[in-house]
Image 1 (cartoon, rainbow, N blue to C red):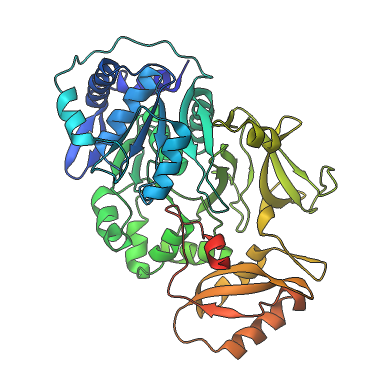
Image 2 (image 1 turned 30 degrees about the vertical axis):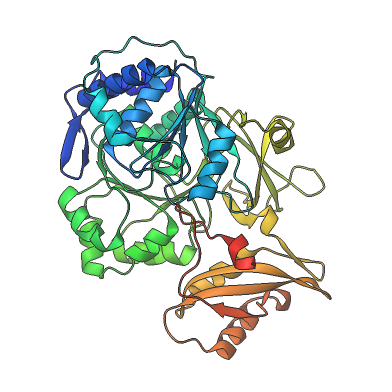
Length: 478
């Protein structure tokens, strides 16, 4: 079985049910099936076969979905490219993945580009039926490049089975059904929007209102018109939603049964403020490009602020200390993961693949602790650990404290070299207004160990982030 066989529960089984709305265009599942059949036949006529790669450099649109489904039907490996990437970054992916073509809305400088509208026009003349190509669960479905926040991005090869395991888990654990209505503005080039959003909806038969992107200023009107039951966002978006009045927030949240946050840590203060304004407890979960979803707070039960919950079904999780031993309760270490959700390899990087695994477990690079009742709490990236005078400092702890202060809107902490202590913590902050630096320092001294107090506060208008909201700390360090 491959992921298309699961999608067929809706593409064929719910043929006449409304599937998706996008900028005034509404399509049924049957229409999506037909359009993707035509596109698959068109790609096949151009010589595409199982194992070939096709890059998609597209903003959220119906054509992205046409091409994506067509590739899955053919066994062609989809390579989604971050729409914010520019020539240098695109060239790296093209040189690495070696696709047969890259599809875009407009020509990309110095990159051979197929224009999507021309393809769609030509595909309309193709047969509306497609002869099934046999592919199994271990067939690669996509190569998704890591965000590259710490260096050159690597292509994680995700199989049909990876996507199947993810969809079944989330649809079961989050009770996603054909009655749900998903407001989806997360980019489809990322696993958050693609695997958690689109895949789960297609398997369950849920309806999707697809947006080109999230524009927080327009969300109030969209919520009230569409009345979604599901909403997935990143922490920065939830911070923006808190700008709504309480009355508007209550109205926006009246139809929603589940708000989910991921792709970056959700500050507990944001979770508390959101509950107060919207009347909903956000469900925070933990996933990665390489593993899709690993750990989730429960749908039924306590969604504990600051934690990411419990391992999902079939996913084995252990915390390994710096000495290589499995950690005990509240003992810090690196998260290692094994399960059907874990990627098969880094594309053309056997060295990186080998070093990423240990005893069959993927080494995530994320530090965490687990409580005596099984809730996992992330401590930050292993690579972000600041060692100052022999003391370990995890930036997230300082960032969460700063975000609790009324005067701070956003915060990021990095370590800078120091000849005496090795490293010192520096805080980059986005304030709500004017900052009293002396007062800010005193508040930190009162709440944090002396070695954790930032030695400097640098005020910024905004923090550099990836398209999914992760702070690009390597840029701050520069």
